[in-house]
Length: 236
Image (cartoon, rainbow, N blue to C red):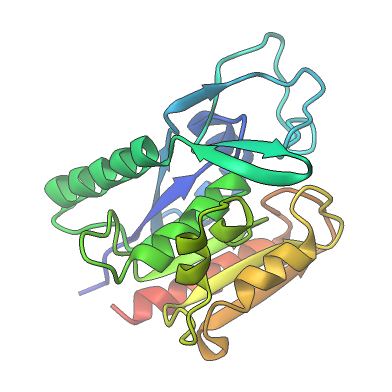
């Protein structure tokens, strides 16, 4: 009997929507058809639309074109003062939403999400979910994660407890794929590398591409996604 398709929960970036990420990742959806079922979650917090496409995820860089402003969202609202993060709002609501998505997946398909796929702020949130996955009452318990333009959640949280969570001597032992843009000026490659270092070397795959802050869809990148997921499917 052929293995079932993998289920991925996909988390969009700041000042985006689930539909924007799905549109941006349309080449991946087509390429992974039959191998993976992608569910694009919608963050709960509305944030301002940036006309020039700035913010952490430039809409023009993502290849998204819109005639009108539309409502856009975030997983967390980060407040900065004197060059440092002073407060992060909204995480309890986001974690409840993601736990609800996991429960819905369980009810609909008899299992939770196999993996997480996060872009930009979504990848930062995915890093927190991965760190929490072995804790009691974890909102989601994935078997692997894919980070595109990501960084550790501790990069945006002033909470020392979060820093401790990410500074354990034992690295995350789940398989991870780290997608790093060589010309990413939003989430610097060094920040992505700091997330990579928190994951077990034997379990991680790193793919660098020549672009910026995007989920790359060139042939090599698509093949990297596909091969990583085929390996995860073979482990089922």
